[in-house]
Amino acid sequence: MNARDLLFPPGATRHDWVLDGMLAGGMLLVTVLPYATFSAWNTVPRMLLLLVLSMMVLPLVLRRHSPLLMLAGCTLAGIAQVIVVNTFTTTLVVLPIVAYSVARWVPGPLARSVVVIGAFGAVIGPLRWSTAAQGFAISARGIVLFVLAAFVCLGLIITPYAIGRRVRESSAAHADRVAAADERYQLLLAEREQQARLAESRARATIARELHDIVAHSLSVIIVQAEGGRALAAKRPEAALTALDTIADTGREALSEMRRIVGVLRSEPERRGADWEPAPSLADIPDLVHRASDRATLVVHGDPPRVSPALELTIYRVVQEALTNFLKHAGPTATAVVTLAYSAAEIMVEIVDNGPGPETVTTTPGHGLRGMAERVTSMDGRLEAHPLALGGFVVRAVLPVQNRQGANR
Image (tube, rainbow, N blue to C red; front, side):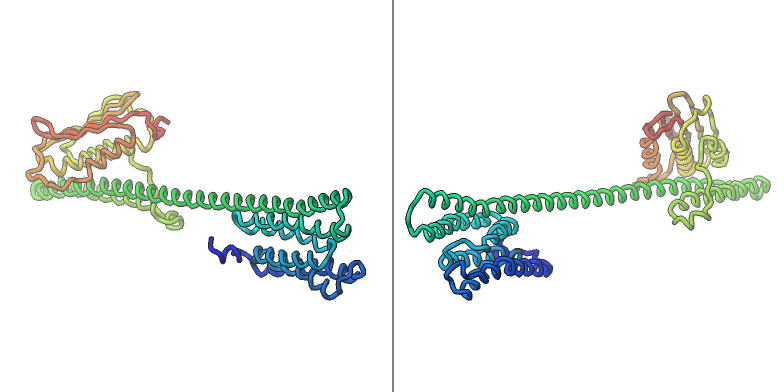
């Protein structure tokens, strides 16, 4: 802390100036004027006595604005008062105020200066009064009075000093607690903001994965059906009409699912008019396989257990993405078998095709297998996806019926 902050501690307001000025004025009226009026109590001229006493009181104006300057002014006034007046005065009530103010507003060891100065004053003042009363004669009564007066004066300094330091420490501790609470609050806000960003990022990834599965599968089915319908248009027009119906149904379903997903992102007034439909479930898988291609068949073992909607959607998306990859990469003559095996503990999903695979291999990895792996892992399951030794490709997912998502209802 620099010298200016020591002499003029920051924080004194105009309101403090007013209060300290009123304190100095009140002490002047209560202590100085009545004592100076009855000048018969001493032989000092009235004007000189009024001046000396006023010098002790007026520095209280600087009580909070500059406690050290107040201490210096009162010290000089005390020296002058010891020289001029040979007895104690009513202005001694200023001493506790000065001691408390210095202890309260002056930081560090420098505040102890008021105790040192007060200790000297507690000796010099009573010594002046006792010698004036006894005429420099030493007596037991005079020594007793001197000691009592010295202890009283010292108590007027030490007691308010201790109170002032205690108040200062309490205020500093309170300020530290407020600062620590504010820091914790800022950390909490930052943590909540980070969690919100992470949640937003996860939501975006989920929506992107959903849209990828819907659009990729629907477009793959539409392309396959359109190519098949074009080949059959000349020979079997009724088969071409069936392909067109499948294309239309697939497009409508894709549009409906996209509306369902995008509706979540809308604000509340807009969401009221959105088309809300349940997410795909296990019961929708047969229709999914049927519409995907007549070269895909479904085999089911066991009865479907009661599972959470999240697990049902995961299984549906795995089948959907595997059929999408089958339609895109297996070739026009390949066939696929979708197997669902239900048990009380887990569900096995397997999609196997016998296609030769794509003629050209791209170096850019797709998002389908990655999205399937993320879905299956989030449900505590495991996924296998790899080519077969004799040709073809297999996608196999095993998912527990009970998982940390609260699956078993």
